[in-house]
Structures are given as C-alpha cells and as structure tokens.
Length: 172
Image 1 (tube, rainbow, N blue to C red):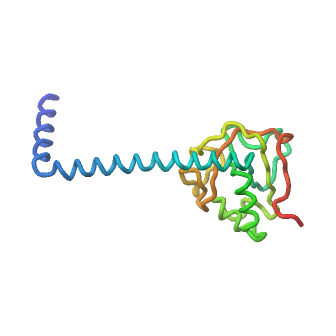
Image 2: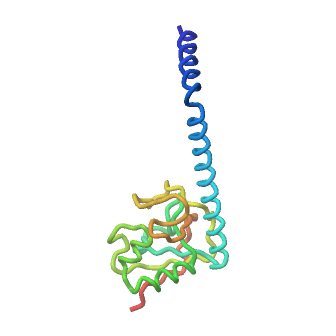
Image 3: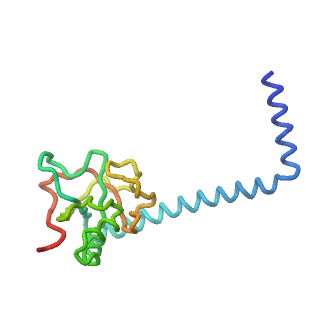
C-alpha cells in the first residue's frame, strides 16, 4: 500500500513538473537568495556592532535601577547593552525625555520609571548577537542586533555590581 501511494505522489509531481517546473525553480532560487541576504545582514550587523563596541571601550545599559538583593546586574542568560558612544548620543538626543529613551530602546512606556540609570560596563564578557530568548526581550524585539528604535544592541553575561559604573541618566 505504501509503495502505491509513493508511485501516485511521484506521478502527480511529474505532472506538475511538466508545466510548472520553472516557477517552482524560480521560487526556490528566490528563497535561497532571501536566506543568504538575511545571513549577510546579520553578519554585517555583528561586525558593525563589534567595531562600535571596540571604539567605545565597553558597553552601557539604561535601566530603571538595580535590585540591591542581587550581587550581579543582568540575568544568567545575558542582558542587553549598547556601545557607550551610542548611549552618549542616545541620552543627548533624548532631550531629557524618558519616553524618547524607552521608544528608542524598544521598551514599553513606563519601563524605565521616572529616574532611569546608566550602567557602564568597561569589560563586558560574552558579547554576542541577541537571540530574542533573553530575559527582557519583549514584543518589540527584532532580530539583527538593533532595537525597534534603531539602536545597536548586543547581549553580555551578568556583571558584578562592583564592576559597573552606575549613574543617573539625567543630571538634576
């Protein structure tokens, strides 16, 4: 019985091949090109991020605060950071608006509270492209190493609070 089903399927497929082989081939080539272009884009984004990170001498994170119960910043699976230079520009361009920061970082309104902090990390470990599986990845998360607001992002391992430089984002 199984062999008969295979012959029928093969016969049906060979009939499709007669008049529609070229469109199927074109579709397959299009899919292959799409996949290759996505791989190239991700690779270029990673190289761009590494270049910015190296010239920035570390990473930065903007957060609502830190939890004093824990000796480390960020969950074990990694947390989001941006190059320090990008954080400088982001803060300067926000005009003191927490809402603008949240939008640029792909956060929901109110996520940063009313007095966000900046966490600078001079020697981040485990720098990698975000997968979207990190704790904190939300419905705004996009693949490719940029937030939905266009800010370059990567993930790093947890950092000891004592190894971070923590300051308010906006000086009062």
